[in-house]
View 1 (tube, rainbow, N blue to C red):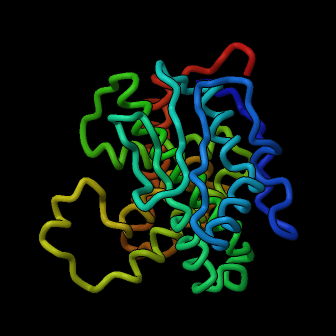
View 2: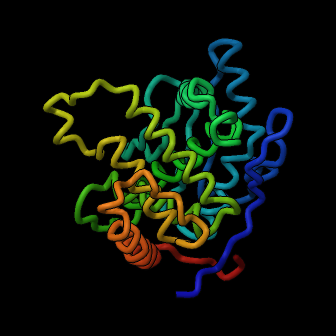
Amino acid sequence: MTLLKRTLTCSLALSAMFATTYASSEQTTQSNLLVEYSTPQNTEEEQLKREIQSSGVNDTVVDLSNQLFMFEKPLTIQYGGEEGPLYDPQNHQVLVPYSFYAESLNYFEKNQYEKEYGKSAQTGAIDTLLHTLLHEAGHAYIEDQNIAILGKEEDAVDNLATVLLLNYVEHGADAAISAADMFAFESEDRPEYYDLGEYIDEHSFDLQRYFSTLCLVYGSDPDAYKNLLDEVENDYLKDRKEFCVEHFDVINENWHQYLKESDDA
């Protein structure tokens, strides 16, 4: 399949606060996907709102949606409140509390992301937000288009978010890796056991989501990311690398049965 490579202005190097990340403006003349902000409840939320706005991350999602996954009914991304991140099918809204970005930022700062990986905590948090927005928009697209999902829908939309980043967002692989790292950080924060109810949860375990995301990144370009799976034991590494190449091809092909590149993309 020949994929149309969208070049979105999403430099992953942040300077000052956020310098030219993802897209330059949040304004759009199309109504396929709307972004709304609830009134911040305090100065911290006001600052979080400004950082999200200045990152341009929402425009990247809007641009991708307009080019690849149009909705029959316009989708609204609603920032603020207490619930989320989640997709609300009754109101066809993605709900994202300001605190989600703050919590992500705290994880990346706590794990010394810049020192360990050469990317700022802000970059990691915005990357995570982008992956999360695409994940939740994926739920909305499945609902809107009545797409049949065999298996866990949560895994399917994780895959969609990563496929979109890898194919259509400049430095999207780096963004996907940051989002994967967030899964790893959350996993490390958990106790060494799971509650029984979590074994039948709609989500895979955080560490599974971490490796699944890295698997897709590696599979998309094994030469560029040849060391990405080195955490895997040597006994399994060769087989896992071969699997990830095949897995990416299958997931990529399958999702592109439902992604519709616009004529003017």
